[in-house]
Length: 370
Figure 1 (cartoon, helix red, strand yellow):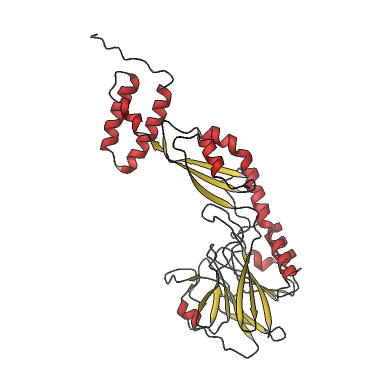
Figure 2 (cartoon, one colour):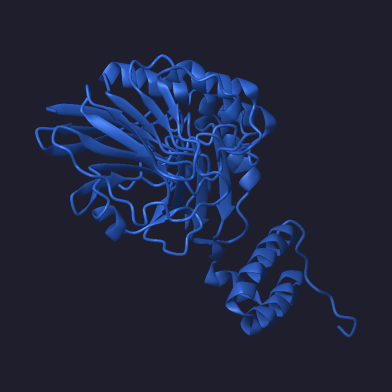
Protein backbone atom coordinates (compact mmCIF):
# COMPACT_ATOMS: atom_id res chain seq x y z
CA UNK A 1 0.00 0.00 0.00
CA UNK A 2 1.26 3.52 -0.72
CA UNK A 3 -0.91 5.63 1.56
CA UNK A 4 -3.43 5.10 4.36
CA UNK A 5 -5.12 7.81 6.39
CA UNK A 6 -6.63 7.09 9.83
CA UNK A 7 -8.91 9.20 12.02
CA UNK A 8 -8.33 8.18 15.64
CA UNK A 9 -10.18 9.52 18.68
CA UNK A 10 -11.60 8.33 22.01
CA UNK A 11 -13.07 9.49 25.31
CA UNK A 12 -15.94 11.64 24.04
CA UNK A 13 -17.85 10.89 27.27
CA UNK A 14 -21.17 11.97 25.80
CA UNK A 15 -23.93 12.63 28.33
CA UNK A 16 -21.51 13.78 31.01
CA UNK A 17 -23.59 15.55 33.70
CA UNK A 18 -21.53 18.78 34.08
CA UNK A 19 -22.66 19.03 37.69
CA UNK A 20 -20.51 22.11 38.44
CA UNK A 21 -22.49 24.21 35.95
CA UNK A 22 -25.96 25.67 36.19
CA UNK A 23 -28.75 23.55 34.74
CA UNK A 24 -28.96 25.69 31.60
CA UNK A 25 -25.24 25.74 30.92
CA UNK A 26 -24.93 22.03 31.66
CA UNK A 27 -27.59 21.36 29.02
CA UNK A 28 -25.61 23.44 26.52
CA UNK A 29 -22.43 21.51 27.26
CA UNK A 30 -24.19 18.13 26.92
CA UNK A 31 -25.53 19.23 23.54
CA UNK A 32 -22.02 20.23 22.48
CA UNK A 33 -20.66 16.80 23.40
CA UNK A 34 -23.54 15.25 21.48
CA UNK A 35 -22.41 17.19 18.40
CA UNK A 36 -18.98 15.50 18.39
CA UNK A 37 -20.03 12.56 16.12
CA UNK A 38 -21.22 15.07 13.53
CA UNK A 39 -17.85 16.84 13.66
CA UNK A 40 -15.95 13.56 13.49
CA UNK A 41 -17.95 12.46 10.45
CA UNK A 42 -17.42 15.82 8.72
CA UNK A 43 -13.68 15.63 9.34
CA UNK A 44 -13.48 12.02 8.14
CA UNK A 45 -15.30 12.91 4.92
CA UNK A 46 -13.30 16.09 4.33
CA UNK A 47 -9.96 14.35 4.90
CA UNK A 48 -10.99 11.23 2.92
CA UNK A 49 -9.83 8.88 5.64
CA UNK A 50 -9.58 5.16 4.97
CA UNK A 51 -10.62 4.04 8.46
CA UNK A 52 -11.94 5.54 11.73
CA UNK A 53 -10.75 4.08 15.05
CA UNK A 54 -12.84 5.00 18.13
CA UNK A 55 -11.00 3.66 21.16
CA UNK A 56 -13.64 3.61 23.86
CA UNK A 57 -15.55 5.76 26.36
CA UNK A 58 -17.60 7.38 23.63
CA UNK A 59 -20.40 7.42 26.22
CA UNK A 60 -20.00 8.54 29.82
CA UNK A 61 -21.83 5.66 31.45
CA UNK A 62 -24.38 2.91 31.22
CA UNK A 63 -27.34 5.31 31.34
CA UNK A 64 -27.36 7.53 28.28
CA UNK A 65 -30.13 9.29 26.43
CA UNK A 66 -31.52 7.37 23.49
CA UNK A 67 -31.07 10.43 21.25
CA UNK A 68 -27.34 10.43 22.08
CA UNK A 69 -26.96 6.86 20.84
CA UNK A 70 -29.06 7.72 17.78
CA UNK A 71 -26.86 10.74 16.98
CA UNK A 72 -23.74 8.61 17.28
CA UNK A 73 -24.98 6.01 14.81
CA UNK A 74 -26.60 8.57 12.51
CA UNK A 75 -23.33 10.36 11.80
CA UNK A 76 -20.99 7.36 11.83
CA UNK A 77 -23.16 5.85 9.08
CA UNK A 78 -22.35 8.84 6.86
CA UNK A 79 -18.64 8.06 6.81
CA UNK A 80 -17.64 6.28 3.57
CA UNK A 81 -15.05 4.16 5.38
CA UNK A 82 -15.08 1.41 8.00
CA UNK A 83 -15.59 2.70 11.55
CA UNK A 84 -14.41 0.63 14.54
CA UNK A 85 -15.65 1.03 18.11
CA UNK A 86 -13.80 -0.60 21.02
CA UNK A 87 -15.93 -0.01 24.15
CA UNK A 88 -14.03 1.14 27.26
CA UNK A 89 -14.55 1.11 31.00
CA UNK A 90 -17.29 3.78 30.96
CA UNK A 91 -19.22 2.41 27.97
CA UNK A 92 -18.38 -1.28 28.26
CA UNK A 93 -20.27 -3.75 26.15
CA UNK A 94 -22.91 -6.04 27.66
CA UNK A 95 -26.16 -7.56 26.48
CA UNK A 96 -28.01 -4.73 28.26
CA UNK A 97 -25.73 -1.88 27.12
CA UNK A 98 -26.85 0.80 24.68
CA UNK A 99 -24.42 -0.68 22.13
CA UNK A 100 -26.42 -3.93 22.11
CA UNK A 101 -29.53 -1.96 21.16
CA UNK A 102 -27.92 0.13 18.41
CA UNK A 103 -28.98 -0.39 14.81
CA UNK A 104 -25.49 -0.53 13.33
CA UNK A 105 -24.92 -0.17 9.59
CA UNK A 106 -22.52 -2.12 7.41
CA UNK A 107 -19.65 0.34 7.87
CA UNK A 108 -19.69 0.25 11.70
CA UNK A 109 -17.76 -2.56 13.40
CA UNK A 110 -18.31 -2.99 17.13
CA UNK A 111 -16.01 -5.15 19.21
CA UNK A 112 -18.15 -7.12 21.67
CA UNK A 113 -15.68 -9.55 23.29
CA UNK A 114 -12.96 -9.12 25.88
CA UNK A 115 -10.59 -11.05 23.65
CA UNK A 116 -8.85 -9.73 20.58
CA UNK A 117 -10.61 -10.16 17.24
CA UNK A 118 -9.63 -9.03 13.75
CA UNK A 119 -11.16 -7.83 10.49
CA UNK A 120 -9.30 -7.85 7.19
CA UNK A 121 -9.54 -5.35 4.33
CA UNK A 122 -7.10 -6.65 1.70
CA UNK A 123 -8.40 -4.24 -0.91
CA UNK A 124 -7.53 -1.35 1.41
CA UNK A 125 -4.23 -2.75 2.60
CA UNK A 126 -4.90 -3.16 6.32
CA UNK A 127 -6.43 -5.35 8.99
CA UNK A 128 -7.91 -4.08 12.25
CA UNK A 129 -7.59 -5.85 15.60
CA UNK A 130 -9.52 -4.91 18.68
CA UNK A 131 -11.45 -5.92 21.79
CA UNK A 132 -14.09 -4.52 24.13
CA UNK A 133 -14.30 -3.95 27.84
CA UNK A 134 -17.18 -6.14 28.96
CA UNK A 135 -17.14 -4.74 32.50
CA UNK A 136 -15.74 -1.75 34.35
CA UNK A 137 -12.23 -3.17 34.13
CA UNK A 138 -10.24 -5.45 31.87
CA UNK A 139 -7.22 -7.76 32.14
CA UNK A 140 -4.09 -7.16 30.10
CA UNK A 141 -5.23 -7.95 26.56
CA UNK A 142 -1.89 -7.50 24.75
CA UNK A 143 -0.05 -9.91 27.02
CA UNK A 144 1.20 -12.68 24.74
CA UNK A 145 -0.42 -11.15 21.64
CA UNK A 146 1.44 -11.05 18.34
CA UNK A 147 0.10 -10.18 14.90
CA UNK A 148 1.89 -11.67 11.91
CA UNK A 149 3.08 -9.01 9.50
CA UNK A 150 2.19 -9.50 5.84
CA UNK A 151 3.62 -7.61 2.88
CA UNK A 152 1.16 -5.00 1.64
CA UNK A 153 -0.96 -5.12 4.82
CA UNK A 154 -0.79 -2.84 7.85
CA UNK A 155 -1.71 -4.24 11.27
CA UNK A 156 -3.88 -1.71 13.12
CA UNK A 157 -5.45 -2.08 16.56
CA UNK A 158 -8.29 -0.14 18.20
CA UNK A 159 -8.47 -0.69 21.97
CA UNK A 160 -9.04 1.03 25.31
CA UNK A 161 -6.17 0.71 27.76
CA UNK A 162 -3.47 2.31 29.88
CA UNK A 163 0.24 2.17 29.14
CA UNK A 164 3.07 1.95 31.68
CA UNK A 165 0.69 1.33 34.59
CA UNK A 166 1.19 -2.37 35.41
CA UNK A 167 -1.32 -2.36 38.30
CA UNK A 168 -4.04 -0.58 36.34
CA UNK A 169 -7.41 -2.38 36.20
CA UNK A 170 -7.98 -0.87 32.75
CA UNK A 171 -6.17 -3.22 30.35
CA UNK A 172 -2.59 -2.43 31.43
CA UNK A 173 -0.20 -2.36 28.48
CA UNK A 174 3.59 -2.27 28.66
CA UNK A 175 5.87 -0.76 26.05
CA UNK A 176 7.53 -4.17 25.76
CA UNK A 177 4.18 -5.73 24.83
CA UNK A 178 3.62 -3.00 22.25
CA UNK A 179 7.07 -3.57 20.76
CA UNK A 180 6.43 -7.31 20.50
CA UNK A 181 2.85 -7.00 19.24
CA UNK A 182 3.55 -7.04 15.51
CA UNK A 183 1.25 -4.04 15.15
CA UNK A 184 2.04 -1.11 12.91
CA UNK A 185 -0.27 1.36 14.69
CA UNK A 186 -1.99 0.97 18.07
CA UNK A 187 -4.92 3.36 18.56
CA UNK A 188 -5.48 3.73 22.31
CA UNK A 189 -8.06 5.42 24.48
CA UNK A 190 -8.48 6.08 28.22
CA UNK A 191 -5.95 8.84 29.00
CA UNK A 192 -7.47 12.28 28.44
CA UNK A 193 -4.19 14.01 27.61
CA UNK A 194 -2.82 13.57 24.10
CA UNK A 195 0.46 11.68 23.93
CA UNK A 196 1.50 12.52 20.40
CA UNK A 197 3.01 9.79 18.25
CA UNK A 198 5.00 7.26 20.30
CA UNK A 199 7.07 4.29 19.19
CA UNK A 200 7.99 0.95 20.72
CA UNK A 201 9.98 -1.34 18.46
CA UNK A 202 8.33 -1.25 15.03
CA UNK A 203 4.95 -0.13 16.45
CA UNK A 204 3.64 3.43 16.52
CA UNK A 205 0.97 4.21 19.10
CA UNK A 206 -0.85 7.15 20.64
CA UNK A 207 -3.46 8.33 23.10
CA UNK A 208 -5.43 11.09 21.32
CA UNK A 209 -6.77 12.49 24.59
CA UNK A 210 -10.37 13.62 24.86
CA UNK A 211 -11.64 15.76 21.94
CA UNK A 212 -13.57 18.11 24.27
CA UNK A 213 -12.58 19.15 27.79
CA UNK A 214 -15.19 18.68 30.53
CA UNK A 215 -13.43 20.16 33.57
CA UNK A 216 -10.30 21.85 34.86
CA UNK A 217 -8.52 18.50 34.89
CA UNK A 218 -8.84 18.59 31.09
CA UNK A 219 -7.44 22.01 30.31
CA UNK A 220 -6.14 23.42 27.08
CA UNK A 221 -6.49 22.59 23.42
CA UNK A 222 -8.22 19.23 22.84
CA UNK A 223 -7.94 17.44 19.51
CA UNK A 224 -8.41 14.27 17.48
CA UNK A 225 -5.65 12.45 15.60
CA UNK A 226 -5.24 12.28 11.85
CA UNK A 227 -2.63 9.58 11.36
CA UNK A 228 -1.09 8.97 7.95
CA UNK A 229 1.12 6.24 6.57
CA UNK A 230 2.83 6.85 3.24
CA UNK A 231 5.75 5.04 1.66
CA UNK A 232 7.00 3.64 4.96
CA UNK A 233 6.69 6.89 6.93
CA UNK A 234 4.19 7.72 9.69
CA UNK A 235 2.88 11.15 10.65
CA UNK A 236 0.29 12.49 13.09
CA UNK A 237 -1.65 15.74 12.81
CA UNK A 238 -3.80 17.02 15.67
CA UNK A 239 -7.10 18.65 14.65
CA UNK A 240 -9.25 20.64 17.03
CA UNK A 241 -13.01 20.04 16.94
CA UNK A 242 -13.79 21.22 20.50
CA UNK A 243 -16.45 23.84 21.17
CA UNK A 244 -14.80 25.33 24.26
CA UNK A 245 -11.62 25.33 26.33
CA UNK A 246 -11.10 24.94 30.05
CA UNK A 247 -8.26 27.12 31.28
CA UNK A 248 -6.76 28.08 34.64
CA UNK A 249 -4.63 31.17 35.17
CA UNK A 250 -2.99 32.78 38.20
CA UNK A 251 -3.11 36.58 38.57
CA UNK A 252 -1.03 38.67 41.01
CA UNK A 253 -3.20 41.46 42.43
CA UNK A 254 -0.58 43.05 44.73
CA UNK A 255 -0.97 46.85 44.74
CA UNK A 256 -3.51 46.83 41.92
CA UNK A 257 -7.23 46.57 41.35
CA UNK A 258 -8.09 42.85 41.02
CA UNK A 259 -10.49 43.39 38.12
CA UNK A 260 -7.91 45.41 36.17
CA UNK A 261 -5.18 42.84 36.87
CA UNK A 262 -7.40 40.02 35.58
CA UNK A 263 -8.38 41.92 32.44
CA UNK A 264 -4.73 42.61 31.64
CA UNK A 265 -3.84 38.92 32.07
CA UNK A 266 -6.51 37.53 29.75
CA UNK A 267 -5.92 36.52 26.12
CA UNK A 268 -7.94 38.28 23.44
CA UNK A 269 -10.87 35.90 22.99
CA UNK A 270 -12.27 34.01 25.98
CA UNK A 271 -16.01 34.50 25.47
CA UNK A 272 -16.73 30.83 24.64
CA UNK A 273 -14.44 29.36 27.25
CA UNK A 274 -14.55 28.28 30.90
CA UNK A 275 -11.92 29.80 33.18
CA UNK A 276 -10.71 29.37 36.74
CA UNK A 277 -8.80 32.43 37.92
CA UNK A 278 -6.64 32.14 41.05
CA UNK A 279 -5.77 35.44 42.72
CA UNK A 280 -2.34 35.65 44.36
CA UNK A 281 -0.33 38.41 46.01
CA UNK A 282 -0.76 40.70 49.03
CA UNK A 283 -3.94 42.61 49.88
CA UNK A 284 -5.26 44.70 52.78
CA UNK A 285 -8.59 42.88 52.87
CA UNK A 286 -10.65 40.26 51.10
CA UNK A 287 -11.24 40.55 47.36
CA UNK A 288 -14.91 41.12 46.55
CA UNK A 289 -15.23 37.99 44.45
CA UNK A 290 -18.93 38.50 43.78
CA UNK A 291 -18.38 41.97 42.33
CA UNK A 292 -15.39 40.87 40.24
CA UNK A 293 -17.29 37.83 38.95
CA UNK A 294 -20.27 39.98 37.92
CA UNK A 295 -17.98 42.37 36.04
CA UNK A 296 -16.26 39.50 34.25
CA UNK A 297 -19.36 37.50 33.33
CA UNK A 298 -19.51 38.84 29.76
CA UNK A 299 -15.92 37.73 29.13
CA UNK A 300 -16.58 33.98 29.57
CA UNK A 301 -19.09 31.20 29.15
CA UNK A 302 -18.32 30.45 32.83
CA UNK A 303 -15.75 31.81 35.29
CA UNK A 304 -14.65 30.63 38.73
CA UNK A 305 -12.60 32.86 41.04
CA UNK A 306 -10.42 31.64 43.88
CA UNK A 307 -8.85 34.00 46.40
CA UNK A 308 -5.41 32.79 47.50
CA UNK A 309 -4.05 36.23 48.39
CA UNK A 310 -2.28 36.82 51.70
CA UNK A 311 -2.31 39.72 54.14
CA UNK A 312 0.18 42.52 53.70
CA UNK A 313 2.72 42.70 56.50
CA UNK A 314 1.55 46.21 57.44
CA UNK A 315 -1.92 44.87 58.21
CA UNK A 316 -0.48 43.56 61.48
CA UNK A 317 1.22 46.90 62.27
CA UNK A 318 -1.70 48.18 64.35
CA UNK A 319 -1.91 45.08 66.48
CA UNK A 320 -1.92 46.22 70.13
CA UNK A 321 -3.17 49.74 69.43
CA UNK A 322 -5.94 50.96 71.74
CA UNK A 323 -8.73 50.37 69.23
CA UNK A 324 -11.14 47.60 68.40
CA UNK A 325 -9.01 46.90 65.34
CA UNK A 326 -5.85 46.77 67.45
CA UNK A 327 -7.33 44.38 69.99
CA UNK A 328 -8.75 42.18 67.25
CA UNK A 329 -5.41 42.05 65.44
CA UNK A 330 -3.51 41.29 68.66
CA UNK A 331 -5.66 38.27 69.41
CA UNK A 332 -5.52 37.04 65.82
CA UNK A 333 -1.75 37.61 65.58
CA UNK A 334 -1.19 35.44 68.66
CA UNK A 335 -3.24 32.68 67.08
CA UNK A 336 -1.47 33.19 63.73
CA UNK A 337 2.01 32.89 65.25
CA UNK A 338 1.10 29.62 66.96
CA UNK A 339 -0.73 28.11 63.98
CA UNK A 340 0.33 25.54 61.44
CA UNK A 341 0.83 26.64 57.83
CA UNK A 342 -2.58 25.26 56.87
CA UNK A 343 -4.27 27.05 59.79
CA UNK A 344 -2.51 30.33 58.98
CA UNK A 345 -4.32 30.66 55.65
CA UNK A 346 -7.69 30.31 57.39
CA UNK A 347 -6.71 32.84 60.06
CA UNK A 348 -5.59 35.29 57.38
CA UNK A 349 -8.96 34.97 55.67
CA UNK A 350 -10.75 35.62 58.97
CA UNK A 351 -8.56 38.69 59.57
CA UNK A 352 -9.37 40.05 56.12
CA UNK A 353 -13.08 39.86 56.76
CA UNK A 354 -12.71 41.20 60.30
CA UNK A 355 -10.62 44.18 59.18
CA UNK A 356 -13.05 44.95 56.37
CA UNK A 357 -15.91 45.05 58.88
CA UNK A 358 -14.02 47.08 61.47
CA UNK A 359 -12.81 49.64 58.94
CA UNK A 360 -16.42 50.72 58.55
CA UNK A 361 -17.02 51.23 62.31
CA UNK A 362 -13.66 51.50 64.07
CA UNK A 363 -13.69 53.38 67.39
CA UNK A 364 -11.27 54.05 70.26
CA UNK A 365 -11.62 51.61 73.14
CA UNK A 366 -12.54 53.39 76.36
CA UNK A 367 -11.35 51.65 79.54
CA UNK A 368 -13.40 51.98 82.71
CA UNK A 369 -10.44 53.15 84.83
CA UNK A 370 -9.64 56.11 82.57
